[in-house]
Amino acid sequence: MTEKKIGVLIGGSGLIGGTIVNYYKTQHPETVDIRAPSSKKLSIREEKDIRKYLTEIKPDFIINTSMANLGSSGQLAYEVNYLGPVNLARAAAVLQIPYIHLSSAATLPAGPDLREEDTLPLGPELNNYAKSKLMAEKTIQLMAETEGLDYSCVRLAIVYGAHDHKIQGFHRLLFSIADESMPVLFTKKETLHSYSNARKLPYFIHHMLENRAEFSNKTFHFIDKNPVDLADLILTIKAYLQQSSPREIYIPYWLAKMGKNSIVVLLRLLRKFGLKATLPPELMFLDSFYRLQTLSSEKLQNSSFIDPLPEESIYTRLPDLVTYYLTRWSQQNLIATHKETPKMDKTVEDAFRNDPHSLVDSIHTKGIAPFTTMKKKG
Image (cartoon, rainbow, N blue to C red; front, top):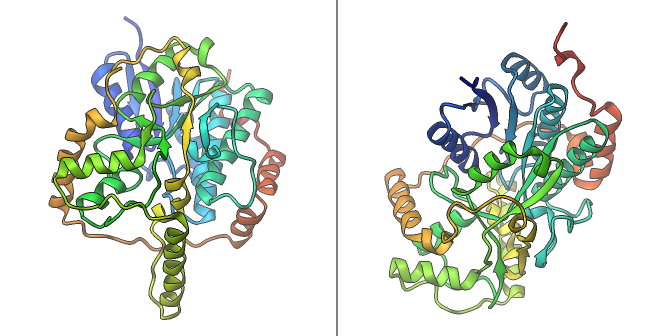
């Protein structure tokens, strides 16, 4: 009988991580023992946690799906989206096991049919999320070239799926329409975006792990074949919910931008009175509501992976997703909770904001070699 493989997944409480864990536990329980340690057992922000846990478990592969919240500070984005993934890669390199890293279309510019290599230039003007994700991609690729790392990078677009505990991305859009808090359309006609189906992703990851020769040290866009018109999707959800809003009135970008800037000014005033308030994460990506961004799926289509659900799309999933999330949100009464902002290292915070290249160079100088102390004795 073949011995079970052990897989370690980081970020199991999220939509992507939870979906992958469920896939392995239901589809491959006899061949794969998937571990998804909580942050108490393994904090991706702590190098010693990574080394200790992975040395004890000795996994056959690592999957990283963790990410800091979209509105996170530079310090948190740096630690969770960059430093943590790099340290996981260092552990994978010394253990000589595959490392699957989940990244984002935020590392790409606007435009149609973007290829895997069409990344943004790394610079201080990028938002925290895009900057940290791009930094991780660059360093992990370098480790493959210089340190013998066997990795695969999976770049996702707008993700949809059930069992998401956070209201962000597509689910924030759905919530805004269901809550009737979107009176008009904050986009323009024919603004196309790519979407990623969370339910299909585990099949692709499993296929990559079983076919390393084909997928090793490569980046793939994992997206639905056909892009989606944002306005059409909004109006489809509106029709499905039988609501009167949002009305089919397109707000020009300059007006939407002016509204966003007004909110920023208001939040600054509130903070002067000791009131904590932050800009909704989605407003940080207001530009994307008005800019076309579609990813090329050619590389994925030409691979040996076969789509297990070829007819499934965001439109075919809408009925189930609407039912699931409306039930969940009504049960929760949508009571918001706020966590204290973690103390930040101002030196790192300033460098991350203004000179991300210096942080990347610093980590490379300190060393991205495999953790030698994790090597097997004897």
